[in-house]
Length: 129
Image 1 (cartoon, helix red, strand yellow):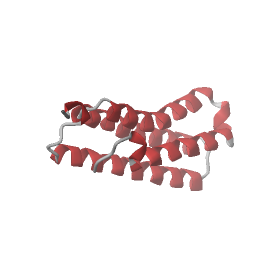
Image 2: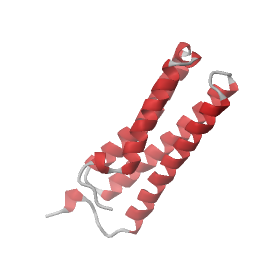
Image 3: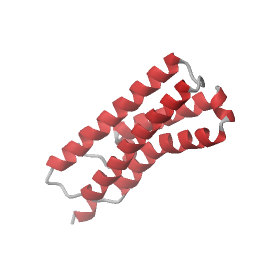
Image 4: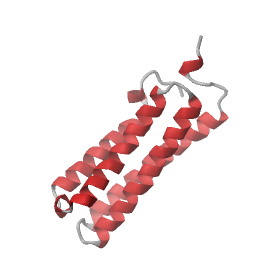
C-alpha cells in the first residue's frame, strides 16, 4: 500500500461518503431537532475521515497508526449513536442496519491499514531522504 495523498486511501473515500450519508439522514429525519445528538453525529462521522487525513499528513507511520486508531474509534462512536437513534425511534431499522454495516466495513478497512503499517518496515514520508 503506497499512497501519495490521503484522498487516495479507500478508507478515507468511504468515510467521506459515510459522513455525507449521516448528514443526509440527519437533515431528513427527526434527528435534526435533537441538537446535541445531531452535533455528536456530525462530529463522529466527520472525525473518521479527518483523522485518517491528519494522520497521513503527519508523515510518520507511527503517528498515522495513532490517528487511524482514533478514526476507528470514531466509527464505534458513530455506530453507538445510530443505536441511540434507533432506540429513540428517530431512524428506521433499514437505515440503522445499512449505516451500521457501512461503519463496520470502514472500521475493518482502517484495521487492515493498521495491521499493514504494523508489519511494514517503512517509517513514513517524513523519514525519506
